[in-house]
Length: 260
Image 1: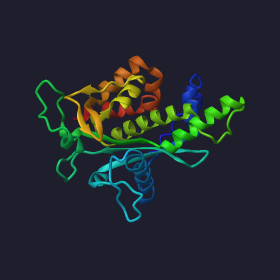
Image 2: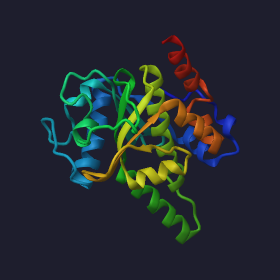
Image 3: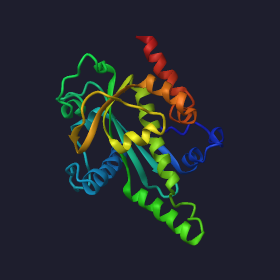
Image 4: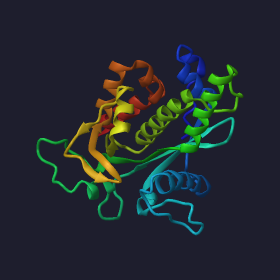
């Protein structure tokens, strides 16, 4: 799923989108080599930078778990440097492990009638949403250097604007993966910072219970994919255009519903 199907000129009014199209590409990590890149980045973010998880793999520099075999994975690559800037996975329904989604292991409270209904066959978990700290630091250093010297960084140096583009690219990645896999609901354990970040983009997850300790204080969250995209379009048409591939993914979700 390389999501470079939209042309840069479609978003010439937005520097952020131009940053994405000139600097990044989304790649579905569907080979062992690409999966290793995902797991290596996850190791850096989840094991080294935050100590959330244990290492796995012979070299000790990979982060992996039993859900990886039941998930689809995506990478955001920085074109000028080849750096893996971000990764995300979507854990699909039907995993032959207990619990079938890690969400249900972390959220031990029963889901009440007033909470969202989860059609199990169409619910996937957004997981391992990670942006490289090395990439973020490179962007900050580039901006600081430019501010001090009044000289812009070289063309291959990431900027803080690029970091925002990675966030959008990861969202576009999991929306695209969902459209390919008959997914109608997302669930996730969301950190407060990420919730605030995506809310600025028009994405508002529904709280379905009290906060839990899961790596850090997190909110059990879920959302109907089409409802999410409709609200994004109302609040941020520009974001909707980007994360839905100009509506192509929305059409795919609608066709899935019509086929039921």
